[in-house]
Length: 155
Image 1 (tube, helix red, strand yellow):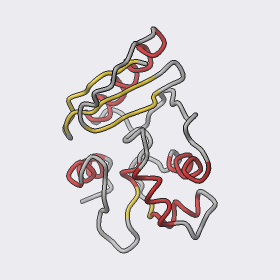
Image 2 (image 1 turned 30 degrees about the horizontal axis):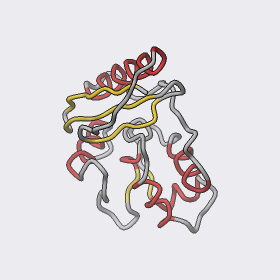
Image 3 (image 1 turned 45 degrees about the vertical axis):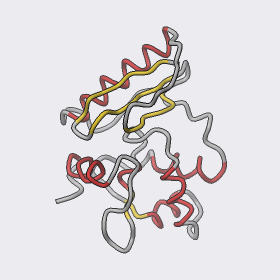
């Protein structure tokens, strides 16, 4: 495992990767003990580069390896469907439930979003409540607003 911190416009972001891919992108400085390998270090370096480009307005998608091994059941289906919501687009929890093949599971989609371990790269900030408003976000509502503005999805 390898770890890096990024100072971003929305605060400190922690990136953690293993030899398979990025396994965590979180807000704040996670106090994780990691012993980097050359493969994990290379993946973290690539993820940091791509995230910095994203924050600087030079990148609209990510092509860094992702460790999807923890994705099980419905949560995995939702996170996989979420990866297909493009830059600049938003979906509601209900629409994402339909995309994941479970049209009646909008509330469960909210739980899956709350447990997304790879924020920004797996773009849970692009999911909004159907009743309006911006909804909750692990990095805080101001961070979600910034990300949506960055992508042109919020005035």
